[in-house]
Length: 261
Image: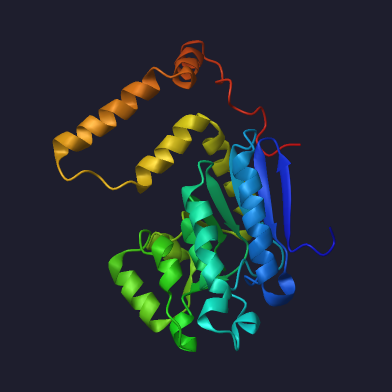
């Protein structure tokens, strides 16, 4: 529809969710939040979707919360109240999520980038935690951002609100790669292809493993991981993968051309 702010499409096992509100730099307005949430829900529910790509139109990936909507609203009516659900959808999605940035991200937009499993940005993209400069706290986004950043960088960038470039973002763990603009599509496609080679159930379980706190003792950790490993070795998916490896062919779950229509 012409008036939608988030577009959803699927091709070759890849769901692309595109923020399309360039007039306000893809700010997280009530409509955009609702449509983004709906797109993520649809993608996760579709067993044919192997990878989710978060894309955008216009020069900015996402400028954060819509400050026009925030002005004059009480604490209970602030749009940020809906934002944790979106970040949790991305963070806990059993389907891998790739963020594709052809431009800057600010505040809540950086929270989305951090929540994604893989993030690729053009080298001239910039980032900033601008919250303190308008008298607010980067509280909600800290849940996804802090696990990514080195502690020194987090203190510096959260407290100063200074802008930093994509090369620095990659150095401190916020994104995976900073690439020339002409290589952005190819780099995202490379990650999508790599992710599509993994078994869907194995990827979902590995994502859960990555975000799960370890038991306090080594023996308990090994016991938990052994149970998980043995269960997956015996699973139908793993048996297909092992057979495919022996037969030198792609596993049954691998799309022929990820992203192709």
